Image (cartoon, rainbow, N blue to C red):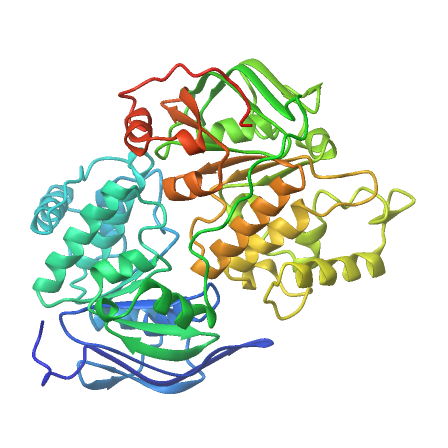
Length: 522
């Protein structure tokens, strides 16, 4: 660690930021020392990203001062931030998918000339990557890379611009455990060099493992700055949420509601967006009042499977039956009418229309049915506004107004909006099946606890739940049965209480196939 006598790498004093109807930051003080990894914790919507967006010049603070290495600065744009040695790796990567690694990294740089010296740029990128212990092909197209490799491209973009203060916004959200370990090794190497790293996260275990100090925000204010090695996970969670948080959700033994499955998939095949067979001869059943967890590493075909079941993707072969009705290759509208709720992988690009209002997002899929419409064409606005407010209150959403755009909501509140819409029971429609894809990905501990409770409550009401998650602990905690998928194939189905972690890991990696009869958990 660097000497305490040096001025802090970053000092933000009295930062205030207000958006229409929301005080996002309320006189926030934040300090990062030279050569430290500083965690920034808080619930979704606590102000973490807003604070860092001000440091990076995306937003302008309404009040407050910023000092970089002891010098007061005025950061009016990301260009100013880059000149000051500040780099940011955003939560949602800003990469051009059709371009190569080198093209993305040097985009906007003058260093390699008006007529680009690509060989020189490639050599520089390989050397820079090697310095920090990761390998990357500079000629590869972004769409060909894993999420971990794309993360490194964003890091390279900052490092090639000589950043010595790095902001990482939820960097492990889309990474596998192995990719996360590799990233942590890289960040520790950067710390040893004297770089300052701001690590925004909601994963308390990662913060305790990686960070030297942690600052916690709650509702736009600093709760405190602590040494993560000297406090417990429960302490950090309480600082974030303001109350005790349940890390484990209690689940009652499953009650047999029906001998007939609510969902039956038989011999299903489906292609990925790249035209490769992503789902291969998948057969499974989900019964009313049970949660069937799908465990598998990212890209094993689980997203494509969920899309076929919900009518979002065509099946090449096989059958999908919901509530006794063959819905293979039918419309999402018909599947919704059968009582299927869909929590998609992407809250922003699939689950919501960010530029539409909260109330408009709340009635999507319901908008064509009474009592949301009169005479089949005219929206019943008084009813809709009351419905939106009531559902938002029931699901404890934090929002300024139902007339605000959905993009103003935090990730946790976007997920609550989707739950509010999908699980709304209206005349003629009752929820029978929930298809939940990574429902807690990117959520803080409070929002994660809430979503898990909702899934358990629905299961206890007799709803069938197909739960797709990369979090093996979550799968084991919530599921009655677990199906393991690898390379598009089901490797086996086991009862959760009989699950062996080592065996599941081998099945996820394709090293073990268990022949288990498709029996519902009793």
